[in-house]
Image 1: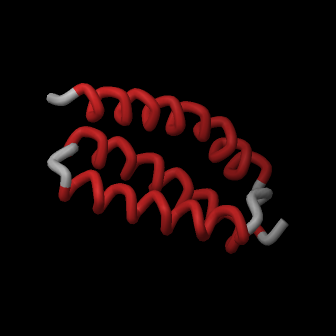
Image 2: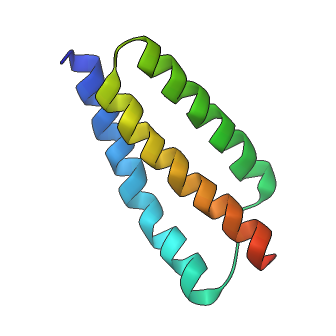
Image 3: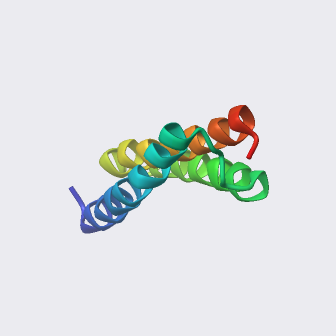
Length: 84
């Protein structure tokens, strides 16, 4: 594993961990507080980054960044379903 893969993976893990309370809050209180103007570009950007990392053979980074994208997709779906 190259050092860039380790750094990106560590950063992505911290993003996933930091999003857990927000996702849980959305499910618990039935609210979608993240604006679509925030979640849609974030999801698209993360998916583009996953693709780019995969093509650079940064497999661990791309997998963990996919988890971050899934968290943001969850926030997007909460916004669409709960309509705060």
